[in-house]
Amino acid sequence: MCSYRSISIACWIVVFSPQIIENFRRQSAEGLSVVFIIIWLLGDVFNILGAVLQSVLPTMIILAVYYTFADIILLGQCFYYRGFTLSDAQPPSSDEEAIVDEVTEETPLVPHEDGNARRATRPTAADADQQRRSSSFSSFHSRLNQVDATHLSPATPFLGSAKSTAIPPATPLKSSSSALRTSLLNTAALFVVCAAGVLGWFLSTSPPRDRYLDSPIPANEDGGVHFDVWGQIFGYLSAALYLGSRVPQLLLNYRRKSTEGVSMLFFLFACVGNLTYVMSIFAYEPRCAKMDREFGSSLCEQGQWGREYGRYVLANTSWLIGSAGTLLLDLMIFGQFWIYRKSME
View 1: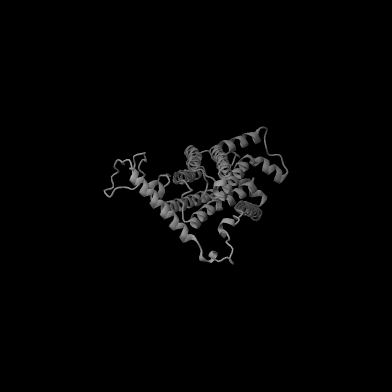
View 2: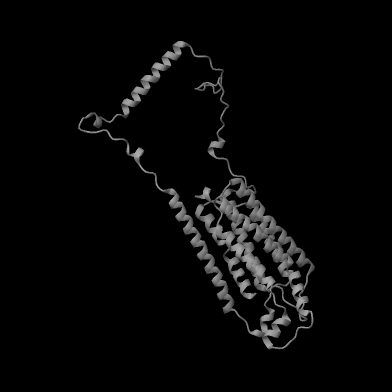
């Protein structure tokens, strides 16, 4: 259980760094939903309150405070690059800002000086003949200007333009190699972080007689788990906010038909962090079982192991729902990365 939680802590320590770096590199935060960050920030605030009231380990409380400060940094980037707005609507482009009048059969080709469109008159035969002569002369004059004097010599053959015979670059091969390099870098970064978590667990191993205290929610003297009503309420509020935070980001990606500007490592670390945290909860070993294993004596009464395990999982249900639920939603965001990958290439 300790190794799972150590990997989870390592992932959550660096989870915000890829997105912060991505926003700074692009000098933009258009790919990130502001509502997503705000709801996540509220979830972290309630997570701190629930963790303190539920008397979890100080390490978990420190991490919850760290998450809150990292959320504030991401939110500050969004406001800095996009202005102080809570809307995820994309600003209109220059083409969308231009107002184009409806074109009909009666719309004049050249607008009048007063800017008002007037009804076009039917051209006369004389006007058509004059327009035809002007067009022919203009076409002849433009072709004459394009002729290179060098080609008038019989000793110099006429060759077509190099631009027309040039072979376009092989962009698909370049895009595929770039995607492969990105995948390898993401995999290497994930491996390093997980290895650091395992190494940290080995280096911080405590004496056997104190290991039974190493659990997200400490046990009482009788082996039970401390319950706090308000701690549980804040924990469930935090879980609900974590689940709701992913929805704005999913909708933004769907409207943009792109995940450009969103760091894949950001959600990759979040997925691994949530997965290992869920595994650490289910891998809980009751206090009496640990003491049986450490001291070689049977201290568990009949049914005590099941009662302690069930009470522990029940006390962590809100955090379990928050982690497992956001894990599923993050997998949906990974699906969007796969669906919209061609638009990023």
